[in-house]
Image 1 (cartoon, rainbow, N blue to C red):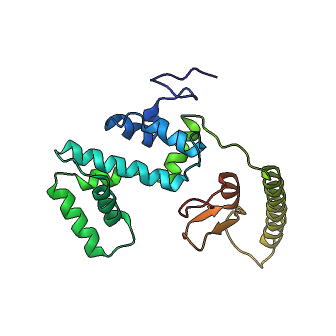
Image 2 (image 1 turned 90 degrees about the vertical axis):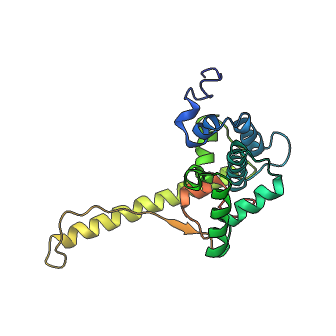
Length: 213
C-alpha cells in the first residue's frame, strides 16, 4: 500500500481530487479530514453518521468564511445560520439568512456550491483515507442476501429480454432496438432518500439523522 503523506492519501491520490479535500485545502481547514475519519470509524468512541459529518463539515466551512470576513461567531450562531440556510424553514427565513450572510461579506453562492453531501464525505473517506467500517455481526448475512437479490435480478433480466425479443419478432411489439435494465430501488419514508438496494445494503445506513440508529 502506498505510504500516506501530506500530498497523497492511503490510496495514493491527491486530496484535491475530491471535493471535500479540495475545500479543506482551499479554506485551510487543517485537521478536519482526519477528524471526519476518526468520527466515522469511531476511533474515539461512538461513531458519527455520514449525514452528521456532512453537516459538521458545512458548518466549519460557514464559520471559516465568516472568520475570513472579520467575524468571530460563537458555535450557536453558526448553528442558527446553517439551520436557517438548509433546514426545513420558510422561504422568508432562507432569504433573511442569505441577506444576513451577504451583509457579513460572505459570498453565499460560493458557500452553497461548496457545501458537501454525505455521499461526498463517504467518497473522500473511503477513496482518499481508505477508511472502512468494521463489519458488524450479521454482515455475512447481508452479503448473502445481496447475492440472492443479484441472482434474482439476473434471472428477471434474462426472462424480460427473452420476452421482449420474442414479441419484437411479431406484430405485437414494434420498436427500435431495445436494451433491458433491471434495477431495484428503495426509498426511506422518513428521510425521503432513494437508494439502489445494493448501495444501501453495503452502505449500511440511510440519510436519516444518526444513520440507521
